[in-house]
Image (cartoon, rainbow, N blue to C red; front, side, top):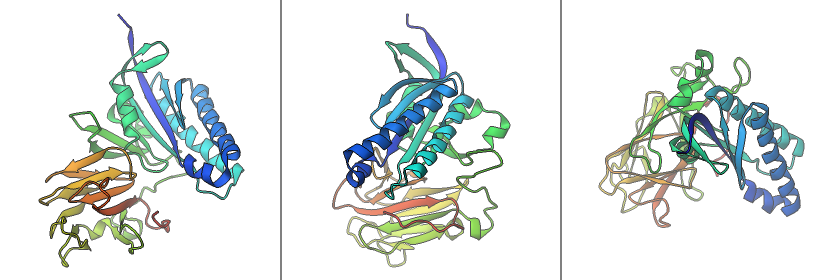
Length: 312
């Protein structure tokens, strides 16, 4: 019988390399990507982890426990920042997505298998730019000070799993120093979380703070965000703020569809609710993969006091 063990599994993925190759050419882009993956592997080894395999522009690693895995994720972010600053290519930066899960795994022929492996990989589908997502099991393995660096995203539906998974997002990279997402009193509107919405093309973007919810998406002129499409109900869906997060609730006849980061799994809502985080696309009445679907691009911004960049 193959022996099993409890391990923390980390998946890291670089996104943006395709644009890098197009901007810099194969040789220079390949050098940057190769150096970056090498740095990420060095971080894993330095913190006592084991690189199981590299996966194109990413890697899979295992650690003895949650703290080492979280430290590695933070170290990876710092390494990415350094190498891109030194490269100074003037091109869009590479983005690092990290997912961590903890649980029983088995090792076979140098590879690892188990539910924790599957969950860590699928967390990448829900991670936004430069985000680190961890499961509740990883969170529970951290001390109180390190738990304070994370914010609950409540329960996410992961592809292939019938039960939702409690997920947390890293907010502060370093205790007491640099912060990637500000902690703030959310009763202060200057630091309120916001969600940015835009239709495809050159349509104007609209920014809504948590205090301005609910935001009604629909065909009716009375909707907060109006979409003129026959498949969109008059009052199709609502974006509401509760539990420290934005939630989309479908109220339509044809359903609502969410695709995070504009790729991967499409979550289908039929009178259901989905938490919004990072960025992605909401299809109203049809899936975002349908080229004729009425789509709303969204981006959750956790520090509205800073000027957000235009949404691509």
